[in-house]
Length: 112
Image 1 (cartoon, rainbow, N blue to C red):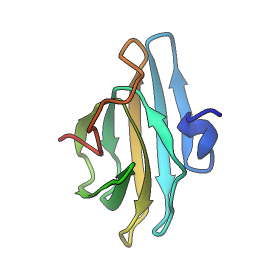
Image 2: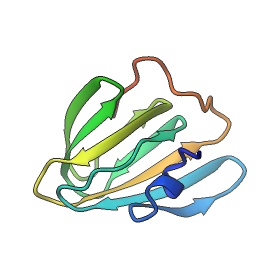
Image 3: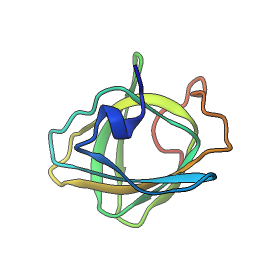
C-alpha cells in the first residue's frame, strides 16, 4: 500500500510541480480534517495561511500553531495530522527526491 500523501489523501494534497529532483505539493484542508497516515521525504514547508494542527507519529503527538509565511525544514517522516484550529490550512511542500526517503527516528512535525 502506498503512503504517498497525493494518493492517500488526494482531496488535500495536490502535485503542482515535479521533476527529477523535487516534487511540490499544495496542501489544503478545513477545520476538523484528519488525514490518513502518509510519508514525506526531507522537505521544505511554506505556510500560505495561519493554522493549528496536531501531528501524530505512532504514539507521539505534537500540536503546532503556524503563522502564514512560515518556512521550515521537515525531516523525512511518516505521520497523520488533524486541523485542530478554526481556520483552513494551506501550505506548500517542496519534497526532495535525492534525500533519504526513510522516516527518521523521532521526527515529528515542523522543525522551525
